[in-house]
Image 1 (cartoon, rainbow, N blue to C red):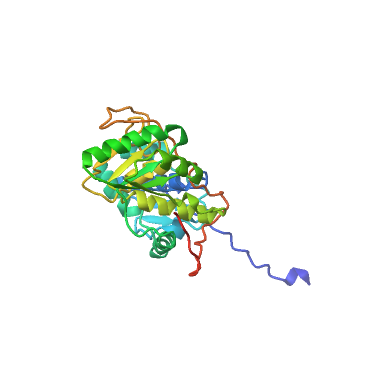
Image 2 (cartoon, rainbow, N blue to C red):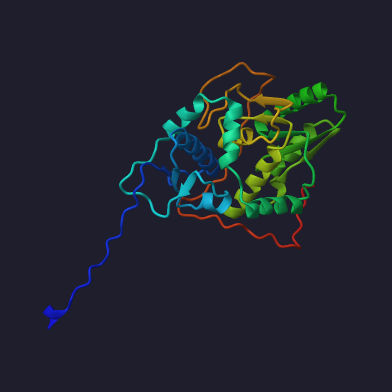
Amino acid sequence: MSSWIINKAIPVKKAVVVKNYYDTSSVTDILSLYLELFGAYVFYKKLSETCNVWDPSSVISSTLRPNPLVKLLKEKPTESKASSVKDHKESIALMKFKDVQKSAQEVIRFQPQFQQTLQRFLEKAGIKSTFDFGIQLVKESMSEHVELIKTFQKKSKKTSLSIYVMTNNYADVIQFQSLCDPSWKITSLSKIATNETDNRFVRTMAEIQIMTALPALILDFSKPTNRFIYLMQQDVPGLQYFVELKSRKWELLGVTEIVTPPTVSAPATLPAPATLPASAKITLPVIPQETKISTA
């Protein structure tokens, strides 16, 4: 009787077929992911092709707005080869930086929900206005940072300065403040404890939102966080004062060229950038209304 049974053919799942795609699965640094996505976007746009992206971490879909030229794949292609990061870098190398920034604004656009999360985080932290200057603090170079800020104050003829300090160690902020001029007001989110990965990510992105709006910066292009800050600067006409700590030229995925510094420079380093395990997915945290965060 079993011979009378008609075996139904089980449909074979079709493989995802695309000509080319960008794979984010090997990137654990979120800021590098954004930079590499931007590089892939420019690369495929120049080829007049859609930028297909395989992003198992869901960082892109969780934080960035949809873009008609970017297609997020539901499955990893098995019959296609991922494009090379080297190709992406070369596509941007010959562009003028103002055109690079313009293109970045097209693809790195945060979702309203994510923007609201960052804004709410800043409001709870008591950040209600912008600053005159932003720095990445490094313990070994505090005196040099002080001298650079004094140079800016002298040039700007400001009698007082509000300075945002980006660091992971609040104890270093206290030490730095003891070296500062009494006319400087120092602010840092490093006092806020962020143990969970998602909360650390939100704090990092909130700090980046602060830094990209400032007219004067000290950055280190060897760090993805700093390259991202410089790329996404909101002050389109240009920074009033800027120092790249080792006189290096901005590049998408690193720095190799030494250029003549526009101003005084000094060595510094950044805290470890926000990272995301390959299997993790971003969940936007909800900050309770009654929570109050002090940065004083």
